[in-house]
Length: 106
Image 1 (cartoon, one colour):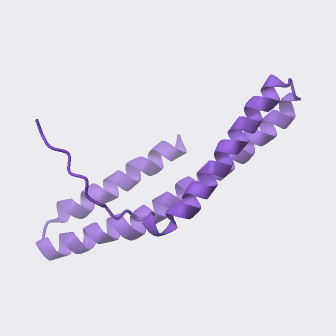
Image 2: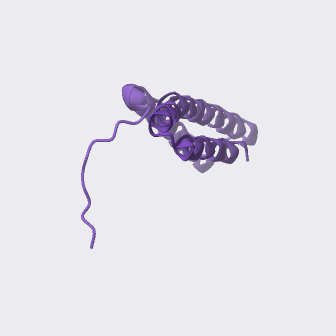
């Protein structure tokens, strides 16, 4: 059985982690608010307006994470790829970013 090593990994969003967590908590509150609106039989269009606001907020978080991933992880992989002479390192990170963007566009 393999041992799990608990080591600190620095991700691209690490410097903005607190801001991301605040945004996500705010979105979480908005979702609870929508559930309350449904429970209270509020007007459909008012609920849809709140859903649209949550979608916009989630897209903003997603775009920030993509930017952080490219600026940190992809650029880091490019440096590593250059240092090692292995183009597969950066190609894998670019593919990872492209796949993530594709999932966001569905």
